[in-house]
Each structure stands twice: as structure tokens, then as C-alpha cells.
Image (cartoon, rainbow, N blue to C red):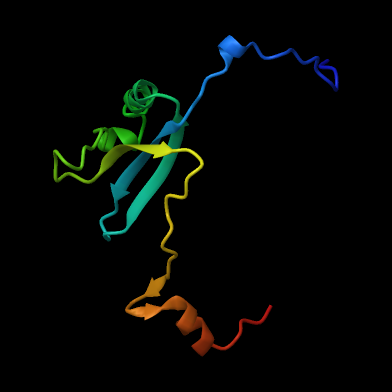
Length: 118
């Protein structure tokens, strides 16, 4: 049985790691309909750890159909694993967004539709 409270220990200053960036691994697969499926795989402390994850998962069902680590600069291929570096404590999507249905803004479309009844 684990006690309700665990004893804490003081952090050793030599053990504290300053992290400014992390590496995000995602997998993209385009369905026959053209719809893109993107899966968030994980967040890693180092590029090496992210690459190891890609190697490990690239043999799994589904992923093995598109096991490549995609470098968008070096290839036109789009389906596979992506590794992106992100700076911590920073907004990376700052523009806002709209959702389009066909050629129409979905918020505007919702205003035109009658309310759904529960």
C-alpha cells in the first residue's frame, strides 16, 4: 500500500535541467477522401529521443504504412512522421481561426440554422 503522502526531497541544483525547447512528434496520414488525419505522438526533451520514438513506432500497425520521418524541405512526400521543435512559454498559433464549411464561415452558417432541440 502506498502512503497518502510521499516524503519529499530537496532538489539538487546539479539535477535541475533548464529546458527552453521541446520536440513534438506527430504522424500524418491522408485518407483516400483527401482528409488528413494527424496524430499527436509525444513531446520529447531531445531531438534524439524524438527520432527514437519515430523508429519505435514506425514498425507498429498503421504507422508502418507511412514510417518515414518527413523533412518538408527535402521531400514532397507528406504522409509520415513530423518532428518539430517548439520553444516553451511561447504562443505558437497567434492568428485566431475560422472553421469553413464549403466556402462559408461555420459561425455565420450556425447563425442561419435554426437552434438544435434537445
